[in-house]
Image 1: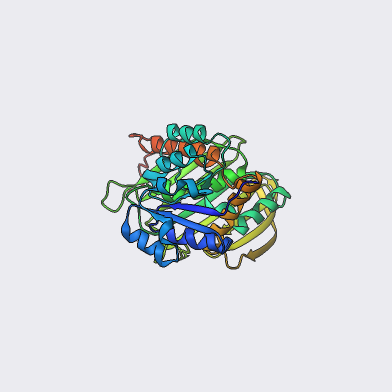
Image 2: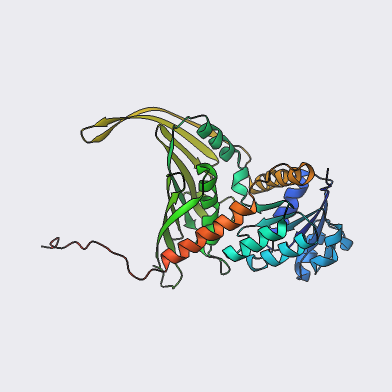
Length: 347
């Protein structure tokens, strides 16, 4: 059994402190180390009780003492830090987006070899995601036909990653997680309505290898329905619906609520008759960001110690997502799209 008692957190910006608290929630006795070139960041880490001899500007100064490396730096530094840790023989957790390109994803996978690598797509650890997968597997909504996601609202846009990279990856990953097969087709459209060259509203249509379909909306124009648990001050909608032949499973990640709806369809002259059968709901209490992070860390720690599966591996969380994001960019870059003009509608 490998040891997993000392964690090196690389990067102590906005997500550094939540990661440190989540590791301590998992195990109050775990030893934390922090590497960050910013002295202000290191002071914040010190204020959390991390000893001075466990703080450094350069992660290589602490790498030998680490059992696990947790990469929480800005996206541009994810791959270099991960490669450095893997070269030193250390299991690595990487915040999303893990990489920027398919080529970088291959570098990551090749460097990892048999070492555990987990991508931080933390919603996989949400208890309602676990419950939804159980319901789906049990046949509660029949064959999965489609997935519909809305991850939008009044939330800051980042300069270092696009809406698809920062927000979309969560639901793109969950859709793949539920479908059980990769995304193989993409069609995306965007709008820039706030006098900007940057897209502020995006609609993405997806096709999965098993035939299921998907639709995802991203953007900052439509007000959300609830305060965002992850981003203070943001008001967002984060709802993912699994559409089956015999019902739906809808998860509201802001309200931590799952609704299971059952239905029977019958062929009719107009297409299909609809016979609603039942509605039931459940709530996951205390599913805070810290709790979800801690749960994901526990999964990775077990992978390091016992060889158990990671929550989201580099093949899905880096390679497949990088390929999907590249396809979305290609689709968005198209100059001309065929539309149908409406004539004769004016008096």
